[in-house]
Image (tube, rainbow, N blue to C red; front, top):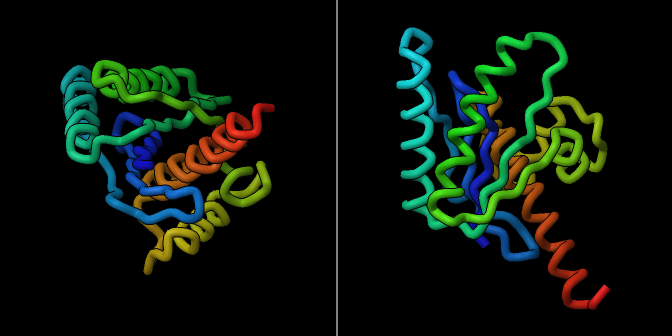
Length: 166
């Protein structure tokens, strides 16, 4: 299974493409889509949308996983990031890639076994589990890989339930 994980944003959108065979993960490609702060919001959103589309066309993922937004302070930032998240969801929707959404708590639980793990713990686990030489940078990239891995674990669980008829 090829999974594209996205950590949504407006300035930086982390992405991670992984292969998961039910036993382990292999990184395929990961990085960040960046948009310049000085550009118009509409141009930045278009760039994010087009970049996600290119990743989907290139890797043909079986699943698209994205983090749900959680903000508790700056409403203006939340709205801007929500715009970015929206265009991230648009590309797989148009290209008929199944979309799966996970909360930060679910991602941390899946990767670290503890829903309140800190960012550094998640980064170390992603680096270890994918056998990477270094923690992916910027942080959004490690988060995107974690989101993709979270879906891999979730998909395995759901497939097991179907097989056993529970």
